[in-house]
Image (cartoon, rainbow, N blue to C red):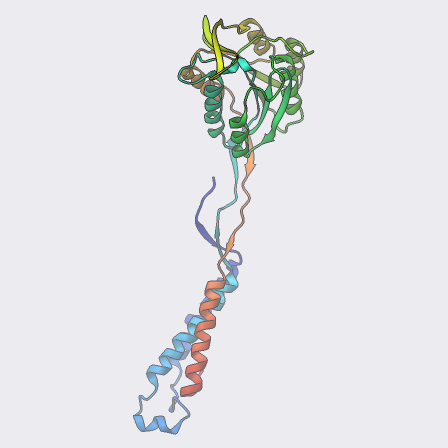
Length: 331
């Protein structure tokens, strides 16, 4: 557990010195008071109680000096307590299809790419101690972000994914191999790949099933997601005078291949026919993958000793000024 906004002392043993203050008060109270409080004769003309208010003020200031010095010596500081906690962390590579067909507009009012990026962002934002990487693929596969817990960087990379950044096509086997290579040396026992695609394997020299077996050999579990409706969908076929030109084309997703890839690694295949289904799928993957790991939070404390030290210095300065003007305070 991590607690925010508390204060502690780096050297709490120093607080024991505060016990000396009540002892000094008792000794001073039992001591026979001095006959003359101040050394100046002029004060005697004001009566036997002359200077007692100043004496009390000087006594209070001396207590502030001592208390402030002790508190500063104890080094008060604020921050976050660092403790070992048990959390659920896994290594995840999100393999994201950015082929041109991901611009198909069958998830109205958004296209497949926009919906997939939005749901992946929600999935990432639910993480706590998971390490996440992003691999983008079309005709080839490239790592966009290596495994990291910096989710801001992961979401920025996810938001920048666009078709046209690589040669077009769908190289599912290459994407699996690249993602598995990122996971094989990752710390911990849980290694997960989430592969989103809307097509069939038509590029790359690596067979997806062979890549899946290799991934399974290094402990990677693959969850495959087919993104797209069934039947016909408006798919971009080129550029026209007013932007992309769309034509109704049959939706081709190799369900059998994606099911086999998931089965070979102990994962599951999901078909996301709309945005709501894709959101349910990411929550289902989150439910399936829960592995306890030990993590530690390290804290940079803010030192607060300057404030009691400043109080002690101010009180000391005022005491010296009063003592110089009125005469010294008796011990």
